[in-house]
Image (cartoon, rainbow, N blue to C red; front, side, top):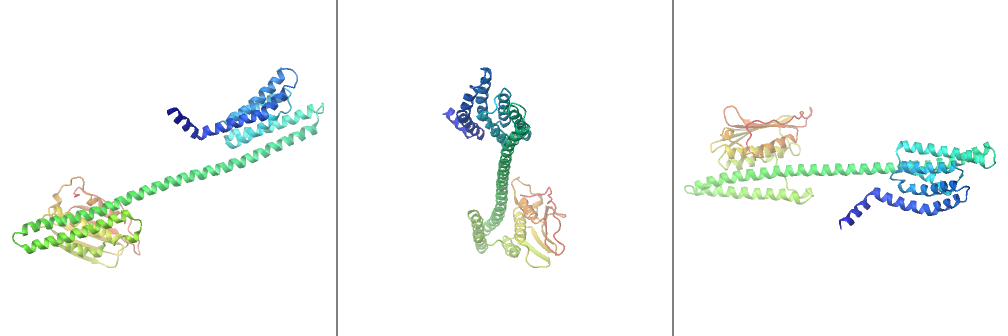
Amino acid sequence: MGTIAGVRERLRDPRTRRMTVDSLLALAVLFLLGLPSAATAMSYGTPSVPAIGVAASILMPAALAWQRTRPAASAIVVYAAALVHLLVGFMILPVDILVLVSLYSVTVYGPRWARRAGLLGALAGALLLGVAFGVYLPGYFLWSAVVLWTLAVAGMVFATWAVAVSRRSRLERLEALMERARRLEVERDQEVRLATAAERTRIAREMHDVVAHSLSVVIAQADGGRYAARTDPEAAERALRTISDMGRGALADMRRILGVLRTEDATERLPQPDDADLDRLVEQVRATGLAVSVVRTGGGGPLPPGAGLSVYRIVQEALTNVLKHGGPEARVTVALHRSPQLLRVQVDDDGRGAAATSDGRGQGLVGMRERAALFGGTLDAGPRPGGGYRVRAEIPLPGPGGPRPAHAPSSTSGDRP
């Protein structure tokens, strides 16, 4: 089985297929032209002269077996055999037509030096043949015969060479188109991989923001409801209601994200939250007992597409980190300042989150920085003077002066998960 598979593999090789086809062609030419040429050579003069003619009649068709795999070597053998039998006295044999075949092959498939040498060799052969006819046919040197035969054979040489050049040009154009198609295919595959990676990163950010925030609120409410159940049933009921609402919201968000994975139709995607939903987000966090205040300054109006979602997610992640790390008495201030060219988002807390250590698996700050960087912005996060923690993001906005040039987002040693 291994031998059969190896044979099949070799037959799939283009070089092997060419060699096989050319060998069959050489065998056919040997029967059609080589044998008649050998029979013609055997009728000449002394035994040594016919032997050279017979050898040339067999060698020239045999050289066609590698006319495409080794075109220069094949042309050398054909040209040399034709020259030798011409010099020993054979004017023309049927196999001499293979000189034109070799010229075609070396022009189409050979390197540049072989193409030029093949043309010059064929023209030199045309001159030698013209001289031979000018000497041998009339029995004395006849210039008109030399010129006539030289021009006739040279005309056939140039016609063959022109056809071969045209064929080579078509092959080169075809190879160029195939190479371009291969490059485009590689570029398309790379773009698909990059798009897939970007989409996976976006979905990972969305899932992290939804799950982390919702679970943080649920955990905080569950802890508060557990302690309040013994002394304040109404507070426990409110905590359970908040947990239920947060769970339904998180489930809806997860369904939306998974729905994007299952369909290419953008019309089926549910609306994304934006900066207009910050008040609802703050109310959800306040329901956990965390003191949150919001300060807005600057102009209003809608943000560019996607920027509102980034602002919402940055504030959401910052508040989630305060819930997880800030402690029960932490107070938070969310400040939003908008100028014509810049949107500044700052979340300050006075909790103990600055002392929290990362487990190395957190993706919150990474996601916030990526969201800011999508619009050429920056994000800084770390302990703030006087205690507590600060998250500060700046996002350039299009305006009369154009967006501010983006620079790489910075990081500090106080990153929290």
